[in-house]
Image 1: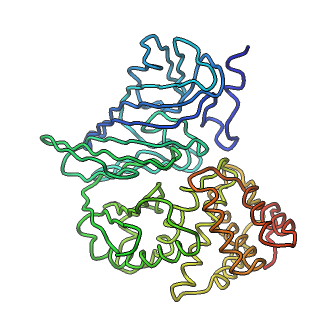
Image 2: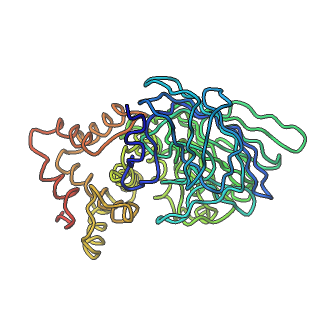
Image 3: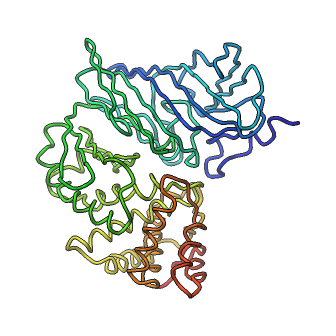
Length: 438
């Protein structure tokens, strides 16, 4: 038997260096210590997985800047390992049968920095005071060893010890906080499955408070100086949550947190259960409210329902962009149809060289994917009518809650909501480069 057959076959052609075969991770337990002023991270990662094939070795994604000091597979000290070219290759002392338990323990450390890619720098990033993590699509390996592909979803426990003056946020519920001398250990538990790129840590001179009085608990984490501006810029978020929960289905997590950094950020960032905005998005003028809607919508489309292949990015960004239009028409602004017409006019003036169903890695975060994805949904809504369209969205989020999805699954589900064929709609909006007429 060839134990490592297909080991080097890419999991996803858009990111051929990311993701790994031979196992499925069910849980990450990260015990981290971070020194803010020296940007020094030390960590121990315990990764629980199940093997899917007999292999002599297994790979994890881990940036070259992180230095591995010790590795054990299923507790064995005889584990061999090699860290090279962003891959940590681990050879257990004994082969493990398919369906067998694989528990990897890795101790490592270094000065984390973003991973450079064609989409810019992603991953762990220093702030003026503190740090943020924004890993889409391939930055998780900048701070912990992982199977860095969105189809690999697992539960997480993130424990991080850092300097006491700073507030620290990670995904999930804060289950303990303990201060000793000048350091505080924060422990967060994320029980719902999460892909590695949505795992995050946010550290800064923040205060945390609850805001809103709706059914879903919502929290604000920001520098004290931004309190008044936050209350204006995010003041309508409780109503936004009500609208989306009614139209998209129940909010998929226990609560929702918005972090505003003391630094400016080019764009807001999504993570599971929280979103991250820059101080420039929090000015008291409510200019960025469409972005507030966009990031909140990602909790349904991207976080609970996560694409299995990056070519289906429209399932995240097209839906979140359309949520901006839905919020507008439910809050006294332009209707979704008016915004769709504006977007269509804008796209008509741009190059017609992008196919939404498979935009290619260089263009998968192009604004045309966002806008045309939203237009695809608007075309579907006009075909089905509001009642059936929103019933479809609610069934979509319920049927695939906390799982991995494909475009084919969505188009197949949509077919149940009409007696007419939708093939021409999908072919023209998703499968062709030329922009269809409205």
